[in-house]
Image (tube, rainbow, N blue to C red):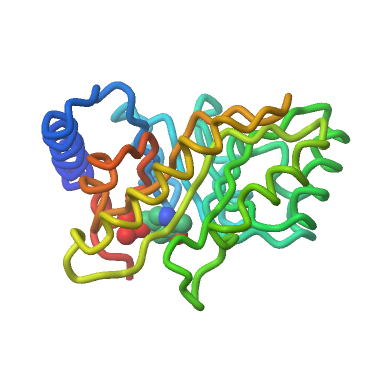
Length: 229
Ligand SMILES: *Cc1c(COP(=O)(O)O)cnc(C)c1O
């Protein structure tokens, strides 16, 4: 448990250094602690340490842990989401980071309506065009936003990406820069349900670079908990 506290302090300290380097405010950046494969006790420890944003990539894990944890936590769905599982998390998550298809949008809108809620989502971009990654092609973003614009129970809050798994995080700087430009450009898109506020990018290996390039949500797992077994 001590390790978690110490690691968290280290992450905050790295975040501060990246902010200083890029003249940004530490308070403008949200840390989502990625708790996939970690048990509820560890999540509770994080919550005691003041963490308010928890990220899970599997529906089943979010459902199981959600009931065990303090209700003041915001649950972020960060992993690929199957259409038939939207109903299981619609009332549990405050932000879905991984929206990448029209079919998924349609289902989220439908389930959100049933729960009388406006579901906030991010559009996932496959920024490096990797076979192994989900997300829409960068060139398709405008067409995608046009399709989304009609849905009443969806609020698009920004963009998300997973950069390539690289040895040297500097290699991802150009992708983060590209994301930031898309984020700015899409801010010009006018629709009632599009309000570009969040740019979710950067994980343990590269969150400092992501912050320098404009991320305002970072998603960190290993950096807090150590390697996943
Ligand atoms: C696992 C995961 C993370 C965190 O990865 P770490 O390298 O452990 O920090 C971030 N985002 C997504 C979508 C993930 O699945």
